[in-house]
Image 1: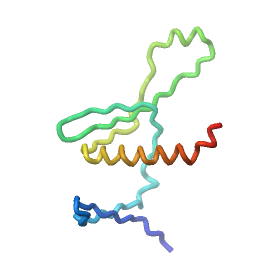
Image 2: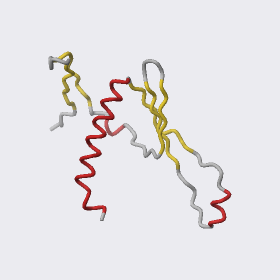
Image 3: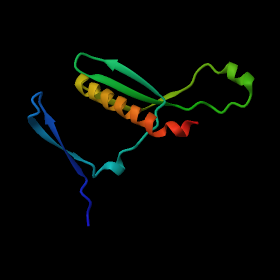
Image 4: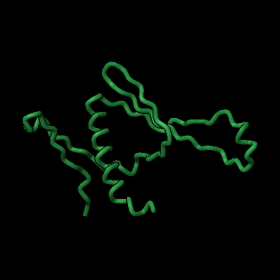
Length: 111
């Protein structure tokens, strides 16, 4: 039995009227890579915003004197996402809501 791998989302106007139905297809989910990012840059243009995500892997340094010699770390670009300002606002709103949920759900685990 095959599992349904789509999700239907309705995009609505300010009067809550459905403008368009968006079917999100998750069948390719396992073929999309997930990358860890420890740094991010934001670049603005007139119509879109570029979000660039980087992974920084600090070297293993056991000698404190070697740390003083370290001048540069490599930041490897792992993903670049281009969004409209409206979509970025939605991303920020959803991320903020989920950050609050995360704080609430895991507050006791940080002791």
